[in-house]
Image (cartoon, rainbow, N blue to C red):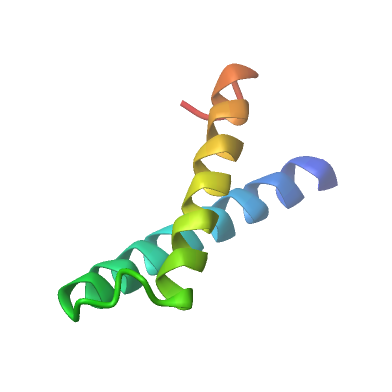
Length: 63
């Protein structure tokens, strides 16, 4: 049961972090800072998050 709880906690953190970074990216974009290092880091993170979620969907861990 501990592994399931750990997975659920990790998934919640991942979802929360992805939402936070998306919000920050929107603010940076509105300020015309799409070429900043921070924006690009968030963009790279979003690619990683989306790939992780795809793997979870593939294995039926999330819908």
